[in-house]
Length: 457
Image (tube, rainbow, N blue to C red; front, side, top):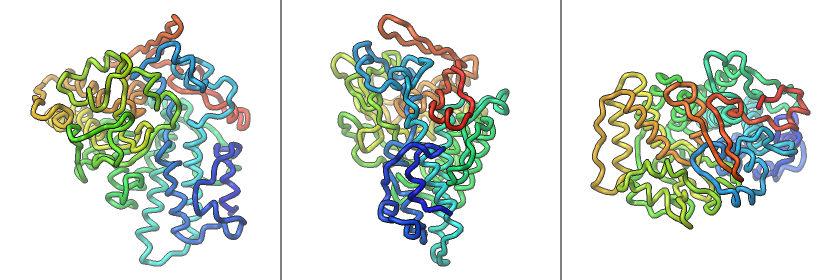
């Protein structure tokens, strides 16, 4: 097996994009012999790269293309990155000559790291006392591969639809660190089958809870399985996984106790943070000057909703966002208890458990209103309750990169289909339900190199 450091010169799945050596282990092994991992600790170092896996781990294009915020023409024109300008208006040509994008290379770089770990793991000798560490490393690698693969299909493949998933194209599945493996596009079904296989396999290997929120755990694996199952509209499974996650631990933060800064709710990890990740730091996601919250969304927060002042705030005659769970200035995209509680609420209602859905919704909201002012919701109409839960998803999970996936799945259900509209320079742009632009183009450098088919736009 070739030395690891050779492959870390390559970030794309085909090994052509240079990347930084962030890991202590990799940076200090200068030759083939020394760069071969010999211990479990060596392999664990590969997975402890928080900059790669956590701080800017998820593609941001979908967050830019969803309708949670708007920009004015002068601010839009100042955007340096063409991807941001073009994703905002759903243009056909997103990259304008750029051959690669971090939304593609970063997740595949993550997959390369974990495949390296999984390839070397059987060769590493360890003592019986290290069995739990061995299991945790293997489970973490499988979890991280599933997570990265899921983020890729949300960005570069059309939504999961059981009427088309056997022939709609997904993204290349990489199960080896060998860069010479031919890149082909499987079906969307094959993608999700592998993703679910990886994450399910991680469940019995991971510790129940992490030593810190940037590390995978069984708690996080159930949360991720709930998120994935919701995205593919397998509502029974989504309920099952969300229920397992919440039965392990359910803890929510009372927003009344928080003192947010200009960018984040807290500078320390919140108790409800199950697994900490953030979106890639482009200009739009981190800007507090260029972006305004959609007025229709802001109006949905009641006057005694504490999120109006903790998560949002008025700045220069517009409503801005500062409610990220990230401990830095990035936008949080990880797994948290509030999301999983909303998944269980939605899927409870969809599967006929209205009282459970209502209970979960009220459990969340009592921590989101000014102390002593929340009046529990009472509702027995299934459709109206489902609509309310979906609205609360928008309000609670704003700017986490989840709205894009919600649009993709809900556009497959007639009552919830939406046409998005934006105006720039007196030109109105629209994104229709089911539009092929719900899958971003694969970077042209990858298409030229591999010959794989491009997404239609």
